[in-house]
Amino acid sequence: MMKGTTATTGAGPAGGEPAPPLRFTRGPVALVAQAIGGPRQVAGKLRRLAATAALYARPGEIPARLERLRARGYVEAAPTRAQLVFGGLDMVRWVIEPAARDYYQHKGISFRLHTLLRALDDPTSVIDPTGFLSARDTIIGHVMQVVHLNPIYDLQLLECFADGLDELERQVEDMIAGVHPRHPTISAIVEDRDYHARLLDYVRRFKADRGAPPPVRAEQSLRADPVFAAAERTFATLPGFLRYCVRLPRSPLALALRLVTVTRFPVALAEPAPA
Image (cartoon, rainbow, N blue to C red; front, side, top):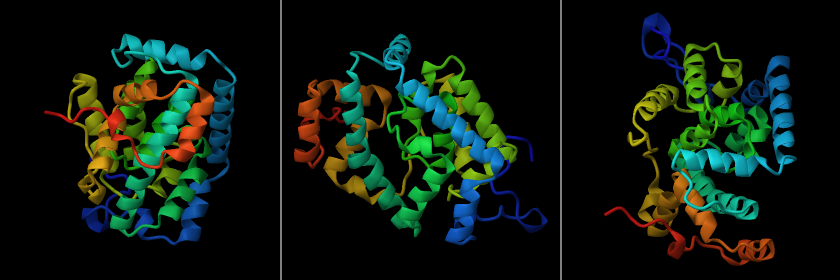
């Protein structure tokens, strides 16, 4: 098959059905060892950690990225750094984590093992939920290692890099072809053999039309809860997330107090439901 269409895990016997993902054929110990990888993969993890540490030390990094995203039409009002941090924590606790638990329970996969494998494959990707202090390739690796609820946020975020979408397309092509440097470690995590093909299709459609419908993960029983549905609607896109952050208190102390006292998504701060 042509590059860009081969299943991530390769074809099955005699050119039949593609082999099932490694998540369903290997035990936890083998998956952990593969997620860690060899010297080449470990060196890549250390480089990404160093790059992220350097970004954390640069106070002008977030404003510069917000300004580039404003030029793309994604930013109406810029949140403070504290609003971004606590908005990101809200996104994790009210959408990312509960949706992941729900999804992996549906798939019959241990959420704890999945989280461990993600951290072993790339520790950097789990310490910056907003992506605003992550290097380009860390964001790209994150998109490739997790079957996303909705990848549009990350594609919009990558537009703060001049070559972000082009590089994402190239790396997903390499991942599908089995030649990406992180192919062995990412293959220990991804449980959907068609995910990268769908992702590549969406990246190409998104580059042609920013309004192209994203591949939204379907297996989510949580959507029956109107509060979760409002949170998902709010955090799904970069503009929605940034508008939410701007609505939060500006004081870091007030934000910290709110983190421990507000335990359910505040629907009053949600994006409006579509007509």
